[in-house]
Length: 302
Ligand code: SF4
Image 1: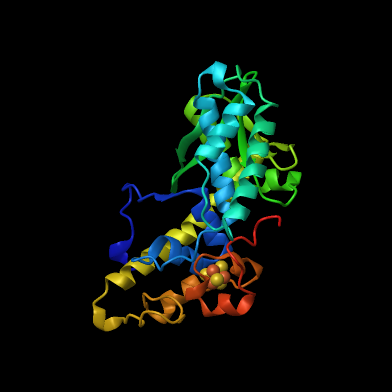
Image 2: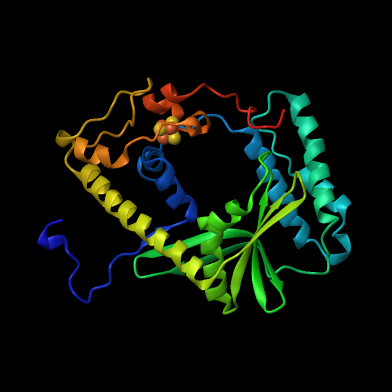
């Protein structure tokens, strides 16, 4: 950065606007971050994943259930909402989709039968936001409950992997949501919960002020790195076309938008097992070499 680009004393810095998902992508793989948030046009993604269809259908049905009038908040209503909003993308065939529809129907109706329909949450699919000196964070909470004098962040999980307390403790998203909800509603919010629908298990973590601050500090560190890389990227793509080139369409040759090597290095790939599930794998030679192809329905339990 040259002297002209340094922020003048007293002038507000531009905040880095992001979601926890954006920060986690930066942490997981910087090339995927670039594909997801910077390259425009965005490289085409692979086909939809069936396990994501199940997750989205379940989330939508549970959100819709709370929007129903009290007398209709029954297990049957949850099953009907799930059926009406069923997303069929990614399944091997109609038979597999129908089988999973049945399972998901049982999941949501079984789960809501454990809830008190009169205990309205403070928010459902509630967007919350907060800011610090360096970043503006926002995101959507599956459900925000009030328990006594405090708020509790509830996150639904539909994956096959059993959850541990460490998942709740280490989740940047849940910690940020707790901070944002607390600030917006001027009510303490330290407890975060993962509700694992396939097992009915609830995994809880109660944060302290210190642990929440640590998460926020980590978010700020990532935001500072990502923001600096974004800036370098934007300068590079705004440069005259003679100083960069565009890769031919089609074959997997790495990112299609070409930037100078020193900028490319800011977005190095992180190949690993996750690559088999990456939406941009076909544009990433390192990711293709890292693991086998997966069918869109391979994330389902069977
Ligand atoms: S395939 Fe792997 S290395 Fe390539 S962008 Fe995706 S996650 Fe990153």
